[in-house]
Image 1 (cartoon, helix red, strand yellow):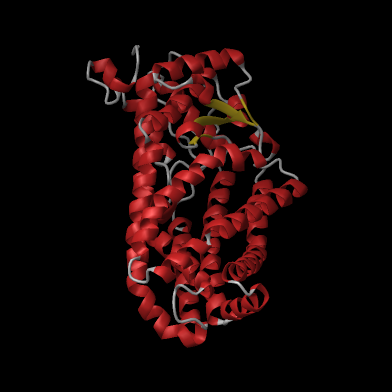
Image 2 (image 1 turned 180 degrees about the vertical axis):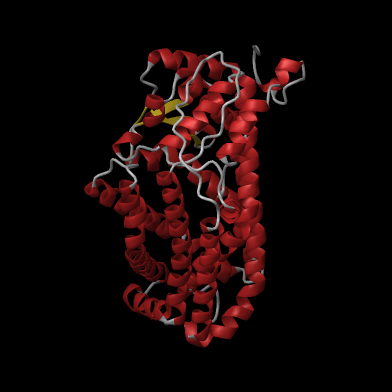
Length: 435
């Protein structure tokens, strides 16, 4: 087991590096200044310093991420080097007899074992930690139910589509990376399309906005951006969480903007209109489609690298692993391990692209609403209620920062006002009847 031990040491070293990156920062002192929101206020909004509770939550979250990354690398490695995957495959073939049924039995057993091994971390991260910092309303029964639903959905996806890569690799040993790469955008589009209508409603209730006065303002703003009003929803996230968020989801006919009800309860109208403007920026600027194209390109490149490495790597360890080709579904843990490794390599690129799109969505929201002060106070209020920190450490930001740090977003809201100096707005062509 020397390679497994070496891999574990490397992963643990990376985790320590992540933890070290934030533990050596100066711990900021809490700020007690209250935030006052005035609709017509043009004064700059100060970036608040996080309190001890927010800093502690940040440290705990980053440490948890490091542990999850290590554990998700070690689990599939353990399946491979302990020979568990090959034994599980042989048992599934004896029971299932036909190829697909053998795969289905293997997949179900593998998913169950993987889920049980991850369950303690899921319980700590999604239940214990959030309750400890008073960010959750979720009961244990609801957490268990949601976790079981998530595992069942993953299993169904594995049974419905997980066999396809093995089939393609078997049929085309030299071009499978290309065919899978071409299928990737189809899969991503399909999952985005069904998510808001089939998957998300299993967990929460989605309704039109309940505040009709707010709805009228939001629909008027949506009309100025050329968005159909029926695509704005609220979700009863408060049954589980105290966190605030809004997001764009879906694809083509299922595309929509969704507000957490917690956000609707805690932000004022001008702040909500900016948040809506930000989400409409994602919608109007086709950020979802751009993400699909960008992610598909990363997947294609990663698949080609995997194709080049699969033969030598499997050849080196085939005796230990118990399979000699990537078309053997006993190679599923190897594929999963490769996914995690490539994710770690690709994440800085992916996150940098994500931060760029989020910044442009902020710009669009400001150009649509001209509510700079309300935008900045929205970020401050969300930061404080969600126990966020305005600036993250370098390593967490590079690998896991999907949004610009809140401090930069607040400063951008304070300074970006091209309309006040007669300069053209970047996205004015998308906005109808500019103010």
